[in-house]
Length: 296
Picture 1 (cartoon, helix red, strand yellow):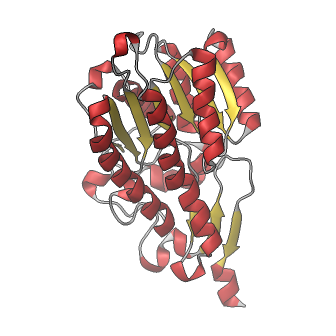
Picture 2: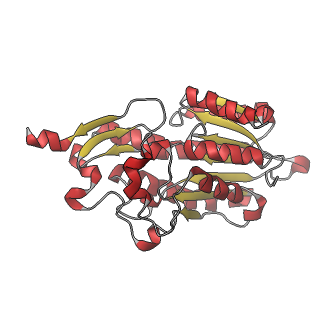
Picture 3: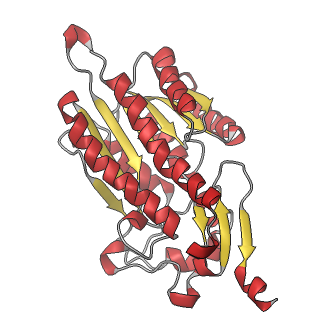
């Protein structure tokens, strides 16, 4: 299927997990893609996979710290200079961010979480929309699609840490408000809210350790990155041309039955330790075991 033939896309956090799966899906569907990621090793691996699948001339990589405006502007500029325009911006980059009791959360870890998860979306929307507002042939509005990875954690309590959940709730609000603003420019803004998806961000190389989270959803199959890629490809295509301001749950029915993914009360996994999860950025995760501290 070439539903994205002739389209140019950027995918932040595109070098692993859901991002990499979506990059490969966009390429298979005919798009040209700029992969933006902080992790250059993963970026090189992604380019190698794309080349092995015959897409080497339609993909590029840029090292990008999505929380920095200059980096996001450079990512959009690369799409325009390398491939001529920008039609699709998938703002997917994320980290687990700060976790632990609120009294144990540092201001620095809180700010880092919001910088990567929320400020980055603002910056991506800002610079992508500037590119998409440029006129096309005969002075027509070019338009485009801005797709954002939200989370069911931003829709209900119990789906993640307080910092991560609050940051994703902000993202969902941005999707709705910016969709209303950019509609007249023919720019759609839509979101995907994953449930538990088997990515390095979630299992950190140990899928078996998180089997409980994977098994809580009603749907019997484990969520893999390709299920997000499938929905992403549809949402950015012309088949979804009348959908904007919407965040689509892709969670195997998890939210429909109610969610307490990480336990409740004192058994909540986020209450047993504190720190910050920096995802697949290549930067070290910090964990302090609060139970051991209490025993001392």
